[in-house]
Amino acid sequence: MGWLLGINFPDGDIVSRGLSRRLKTFQADWLSVMKKRANEVLEPDEPLCCCEFVDLQGGRSHVAACCCDCEDLDDACDRWLKKEPQKADSLSRLVTMVSDRLRVPWFWGGARRVDLSVLPPMLLLPVLLHIAALHFLLGMVVLTALPVLVLWYYYVTHRKKGRTLFFLSLALFSLGYMYYLFLTEVFPRGGVGLTQLGTVTLGVALTLASLIHTKREPGYVRPHTADVHSTVTYHSSPPDRDPAHTSLNGVGQEVVLANRGSGSEQQGQGVEQRESGRSRKWCSLCRVVRPPRAGHCRICGVCVLRLDHHCVCTVYCLSVCVSCPSCRHCGRINSCVGQANHCSFLSTLLLFLLTSLYGISLVLRSVCPQQNLLSALLYCPGVYNQYSSALCFTCAWYSSIVTGGLLHLLVLQLINVSYNVTEREVRTALRDKTARSHYWGLVVDTGVYSHGFRGNWAEFLTMGEGLHTPSPSLTDLV
Image (cartoon, rainbow, N blue to C red):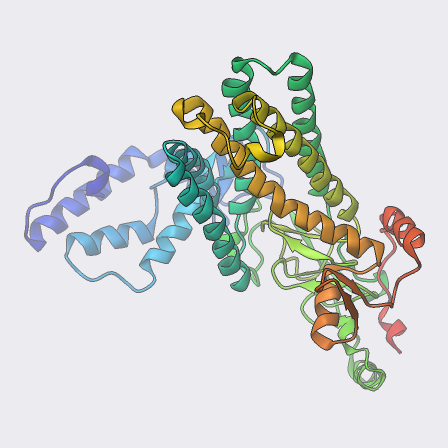
């Protein structure tokens, strides 16, 4: 614990052990109140104050006791003082401890955890954009490297089934920071009236509201009532879940337990499933029967109705979950785009693109008033003579890159809806070579669920109705 007080220990194991014991005693006296609270077991009905939370061991703790009663940190410091090698998992255990105890006070439900992955976009994006505004060569390097690094990180996390708030933080902070620069750099330059400012502000507000609406449940496959045999309420991390990714904060979590039957009934059902070729309808992980077009997301760990894809820029966390027996998405991050939130997802993309395109046009008119909008991004003479103009021009280029990527995503989504296919079905059909592909794979038609252009859009716009209908019973398989 010497690093907490800035003390340099002299050499010698005896002196080091003595000072270590004294510092441990001092730390225990200094945070005695917090340690008592940390060792308390949270009662199910006992509310948490704004600065309290439930730690990984299921006990009550306090944000001020960030370094209190931490055996992993004490062991690491002792080994460092004794000049002994650290354990193989010491770093990972310390990172897990820090991520669990790094919290901010909240008004209800106790202190909220601050995910470390939200910090890099908030710190690096302004720095990189300001560096890119210094010279056009630096701008080319930064604006080329930034998308490459983001795509590389997405590939790594998606390949490892990683859950991170990095992309959501990048999307929200990019939107907020671009709006902030629009208010502080573009609007004072003139050429942008109050009506145009109000339009941009309304677009940002509608985009955020649509994103919040997209964060609702995507439509989880729920077990049939006839298959549910019991419900268990956890007030700490369930035994089959990684506690590092779970934080109930004292809120009871209900987990529905279902089975597939017993004895000869289960065996007979298994035979019928194999003979009929419909064995994929039963999800052994979620222990539910999947209706047609539902799929299991390997990142969220749940089955979703009409699963389209897993989106890294939407989040959905449940404090009380009754949707699936494994309940692996509770306390986790990221969400799927499914039957319940697909329309909201498209509206979010559309609102963001319209707001971004309008904002980019206003910025280019302000910094390059003599140039045409289509050519201003490629040639704007004298824009780097003034740092403010260069910063606005760089942000316009950054917004254009993001807008181009999302525009490609929106076009693919509109085509899929027009042919009544999901992104998951497109990948499966292309892999199995069971679909017709046109225009270099941009249009993929499976011909399974299509009802014509008008019928497909009518089904898409009304598919969110009646989602409370339970999934098919186990007897429906045979």
